[in-house]
Image 1 (tube, one colour):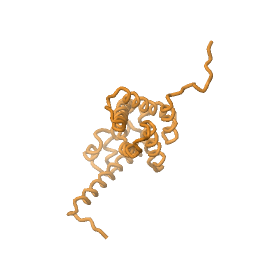
Image 2 (tube, one colour):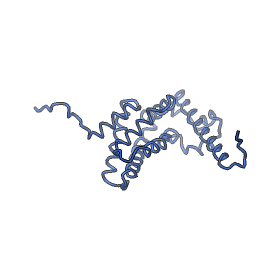
Image 3 (cartoon, rainbow, N blue to C red):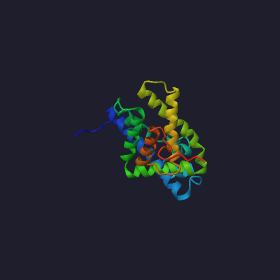
Image 4 (spheres, rainbow, N blue to C red):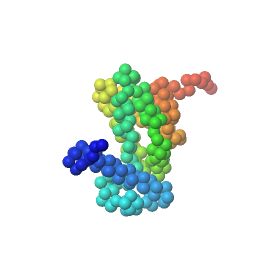
Length: 207
């Protein structure tokens, strides 16, 4: 049996990182509990810190603002890894759909519930709605970067940016009316990849 000692650099580093991640997760979970109980606007950083048993200064080491605590997307690294694992011969949007749908389909129920609650806060809390625009831009930048990496093109390439905007916009649009889950993500991406065939299965009526 191996024993981790202070002299074991990588092990200590690993322990430190795990402790930091536990602290970060505790802060977020306690914050969301307080948001449910008393509302986002009524919850202070001092209350969150006290509930997580950390100091306000420790809170700020993890989250610069209360808004950022909600905006932070912990699934980004997981999605990036899943996309990079897709075979290179798979078409870019198909690879992205497979990666995103796979990640959400395999999320533990508690993590899915947390992500759905996070999205609901962004869309329905007045103080947070202004962050949606910034999140939209961030999503386009991330998507464009990932598509460009996969295709060997520049992230500022016109077609790459348009494709990234279509995907980000599609997600933004459906999340206002439908729950965030693997089924809806797949449905939206399939529709975009098919060329947005809106109304093509219905006869066109002319006056």
